[in-house]
Length: 475
Image 1 (cartoon, one colour):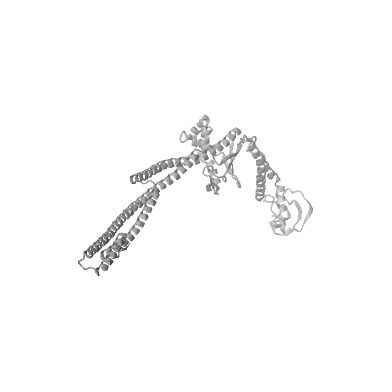
Image 2 (cartoon, rainbow, N blue to C red; image 1 turned 45 degrees about the horizontal axis):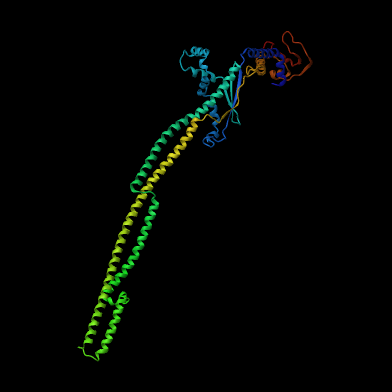
């Protein structure tokens, strides 16, 4: 179909087209004027997802997740928020609503849930695409009621968001409180065991006592080494005293023996001197011999005395060495016992420290959960409260009329083509060509009037054998 054919059809069916447009546009305007006016109140809230939590001191990763805003929209549209609006605005006390509920449900079910479901039908929640703002819209025939409901949903949403945060915190606080009491008892028990063990073993400062006892053991070890050297020396001197006591250094250096040996030498020299003069029986020689024997006996006595003193010193040194050895063994046993006690105390101290760390960690979490359970702050703020709308949001007469005109035009054109298909007419040269499949020989310059038998609208010159093939006006 050419554009000229399209225009010819519209021109021929203009009354039908105009009638359809007028009827549809008129019906739309009438319906828009007769429909009850609806008012939409809008409120906006903004959600802060970047500022750190005032209690935890950190940004929660869940707030930056892509589904966080969608979750908030679902919360606003939830039954919990809607039922909270019913309680907040005391809609359950409205006798008209209760009467509607009784008529609709015969008193079955929950009245608040029914009213909340009724309110959700007029609620529209739309998050902004590239921001953290959520728009809450409520539509009602009463502008005041629409504004009140929009603000009610905002208030209920804020309260619910706080409850969703506080309720788990209260549960955590109860758990941590009970856990803190158990850990406190465990800590007190561990401290009591440590104190009892220290008191039982007389332990005040384990490390200092151990250092003192280690120093004492080192001193005893040094004494033992010294006594072992003395014992070895005294033992060798005793052996020498038993074999050749006169060769002992103590005997040689003894002044008494030295004097006696000097006197003995003089007496022996004198004896030799007078022996040449006097005989053996001379009194002086007898006296000198007696003196010499006496001196020799005294030297031998002194030598034996000194030798016996060396043996006594050896016994004393051996006894002291044995005593020091016993002291060292006792000191070692004491140190081993103290080290075992230190290890036991170390275990008890670690038990106390572990119990203290656990108690401190749980106490810290308890304090945090206690603060969270008492908070009345949220990361949601009212950006724009709802106000009473001055103009209705629907019906929009101009928009409905324009839309009706567009749709009516399409319907009218379609109706005109439908009528044309049901009653086909020859209106242009192209119609003749398409219908008969033969060329047009010519046409008159001016159109002629339609004959009573439904002839051509314009003067056409056709072959004689084709004129009989033209359709009648009713076909």
